[in-house]
Length: 128
Image (cartoon, rainbow, N blue to C red; front, top):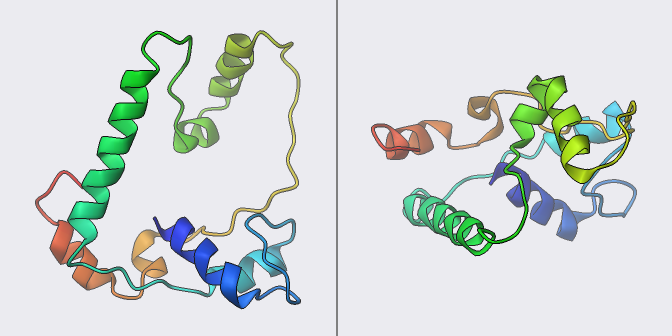
């Protein structure tokens, strides 16, 4: 959600020399984009998160008859053997893959959301 809001923010401001970029290749560019801290609407936050859950659940339900794997970004980044599983699933040779992309949001969520305390209080005690 933070990435989506930040991406929308940059789409209109075009902070990098007048161009919108969803993915960057330098730490300087990443730092510029990471400065934006969205303010989340805590009134609609639970609804938005439930909608995202429903969307994901329905997508997975629709994929039941299609050969697929469920992959989470965090798992891929934290567990390098997961990449081998993905390549095996895709039936492509295992090889070293590299990316020039630089991660934009590297800080804890509490440092990336303007109204973190409000968000924390709104979600505390829920499954989110």
